[in-house]
Image 1 (cartoon, helix red, strand yellow):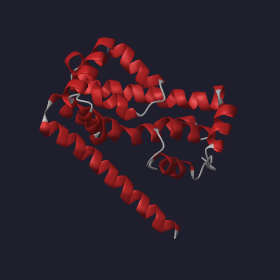
Image 2 (tube, helix red, strand yellow):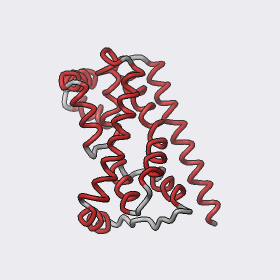
Image 3 (cartoon, helix red, strand yellow):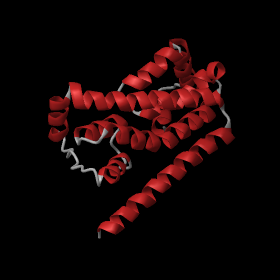
Image 4 (cartoon, one colour):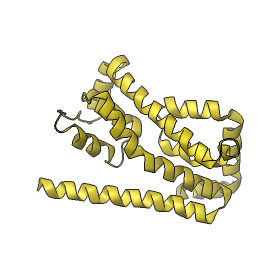
Length: 199
């Protein structure tokens, strides 16, 4: 975000003005288009969560925006599973292997542990994580529960942070940052514990 701001300033564009323009475009598109795109497109979640609160809180209320975002994410997770398992399985398998992503070996006993390892690995976007778990054969119900619960704090933190930044509400921005920071710290501690168990 700092890098984007620096680029905008270098080009003589006010970051605040650019942010207002983005929110205006999102608001004009309307919540139906926006949350449908969030549910179906394989883009990073942050692209959707940050503008959502400021754009639609007036129509949905702030908790309503968070709820709509969580529903859209649930649909995205389910849709990604269907794509990987039914429609594009051979293509996605070849695409992932070509890029060095190993499809995890999953059994009934290790399904939750493998899913958490995939979900809590920093870097891969949500859609890629979904494809890996679907191709590994994770049962759909368990896949939905684990995947959705892991994304909930990221979505909530992203919406709060975005609303705080775009509305100029420092308290809200710090709250969102605190939520995301707590989640990142928890993920780091969990991964460190897992590494310790494997040694």
